[in-house]
Image (cartoon, rainbow, N blue to C red; front, top):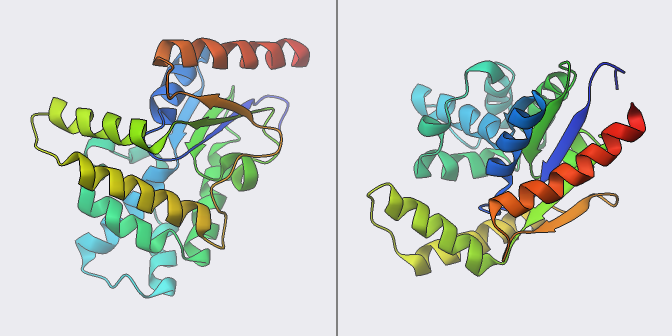
Length: 215
């Protein structure tokens, strides 16, 4: 890792709060932020837009290598059908390798970077000086997703969302390539009963301690 960069790796399951926390941390320290999940969604959207199949790993890898990390639109890429498509290509080793290479290049940006996803501390940036694993119970995460959808004026079924959260956890934690799990040296933040402000304060204490040691 370059002496001019400082990488913060944040992992955790869906709707645990890691995205909100990551953006807040990046803003606080003036670091570049990357939601690595969007790189898989961008690949999936490109396949959908081009009418290409989702069972051809070579085609998916080619598309993955063409994804521009600078132009990822969260609002567009957060659509449910894109997420479902992304989950299908995210299990392909060649696609993961292509996107991990791009994510590692992003992590070298000065003065520092915050990357969030599901394999940042274990695979993408195993040497990151700060690793956080943000989690919450499936019930709490489903409730957050449910409230978020209602807040946007849409309708939702809590039971369907709850089952979807559990299914995604099983898929993410059970896959052979880069399964979701905390890095051995990650700091655990359980946000089940913690506000985003409390989580941010806890994360900031951890980051500041490491930055002061590295100064």
